Length: 293
Image (cartoon, rainbow, N blue to C red; front, top):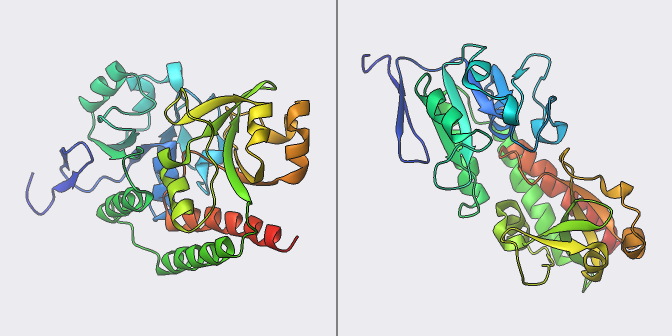
């Protein structure tokens, strides 16, 4: 390996990942792959987590060209040979702290790293969304991608639009983030634990929190408790493992359903400027509509 041909990237575990030359065949966790695509890097393959199934979750794939990107599967279907079947020369994984590769069994992850370089980006609650986005952008540039100035401008405009919309929000209009679990229960997000929800709060959005109690990131609540939050806007989990909110028929939720505006939310957000601008724009649109009621 020469200085001219070597590729290096310091990942979020503090490890310097090295290859003989710039990797060209990237296998990525779906969130990472969709983010890299927005930066001009097409992964050759993607894989999911234990929440995913035999098909890729469209809530997580963004604008990835799924006809050209091989989905390796998820959960117990993932082993080293399956992950390596496309001949990747780099794996991009995410972690929620402590460096563990999300979505992969620890033994599988260990054997994978014996065969191919692995970069880990920390997307956990200790990170700001801006910092996570910066790390993906740095990785993309190192792989030959380029920043999109139009996307950066769109994100700035979306932030200002949301700030203005939040400032004009009617007093008492609350925004809750829910992941429907069943006809009996939902998971209510604790906003301070989610980087993308903290961005909303920083821009002035009035997020409502579930009662204190068990659960670090989520509080498990009945639909009566969810309705008691009296949300004017609901950010609803649209991942495949969540029950679609419009299928919830619990009587206790009926009045809240009629009152609230619904905004789709992916708790594993893409971290590109394009994806972030789209989400902020949806929240701003809901707030603007509420202000005009």
